[in-house]
Image (tube, rainbow, N blue to C red):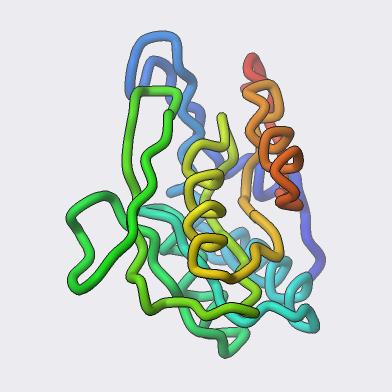
Length: 182
């Protein structure tokens, strides 16, 4: 199936003033109501990473789980969950970070990765990059490498992709929105 950026982008719903006034939230959930759009998104990621050296898929809490689990299945790779603080059992390591809404913390199970592993980080969008940056630091603390940070949507005006690239984390997004674009 050929990727149609317009078809996917048209499924992403702008929600004004959510979760706080002045924010335009990019809601990807309508993609899951459109089987053709969902297949395009998944197929595009599968094709991009099929022959890559990635060893693990890292899905960021919570919308990253939706595409991450499907991609891990399709590529036959282990799925590593990055969860909000207090949601994972067993021994974890944590990293705090700033978001556009305040401070947060994500955790990963300490036995999820080994030195030499190559992880693809996956979430719904890259905004300020805080969650991706924290996840990349956790991956590196475990001795593994981040192959790429991937998302359905990039919000380039919020500089998250730029900050990731400055941290030597390549980025890939299927589409992008400007702050005033509907």
